[in-house]
Length: 232
Image (cartoon, rainbow, N blue to C red; front, side):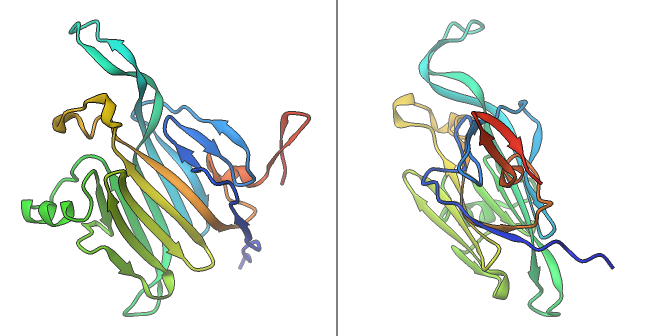
């Protein structure tokens, strides 16, 4: 038997998103940095004993005139770095029937997941207009899911994007936002998903000293004379 290290509760005081756009990050101790992944690759954002947060990075865009050499078409956005297009979050929860601990899987996609019916897609579209939220392998069909002692998952939709709020008492409080392209890009309905992305905003998280990942490792990182120093 090996006892788990005592977790550290880290309230995030920075007002901006932890991972935003192409992507700009704010670490768990307020550090500002950028992270550019490889298109089509998956990365661990946060990993600890009771939670795992991964994301897929794909081509990102920013406002600016761009001429496609292959088609000679002019666009109001140009490629610039990468951003998140898929997110998977696994966390521990108490089973409502057996009261034993089990894992809960929450996934966000910009493209329709396979194996779902037109009726399921239509019902989901009434809740989330610019993406797909999958809970334990099924499209969410209600705006609020209460997981007993494990917390609450809540969907909110607006013209500015759809938001998934995740609240796990004493462990995790944050939100994932499905962000559509700016109106000034004049993107067609068929191109909407190509130019959309996912942002992460983290309000509070409780981690052990062994937590790691692109975001998780920043609990140990501080700056001395402008240089990063890894503690622990």
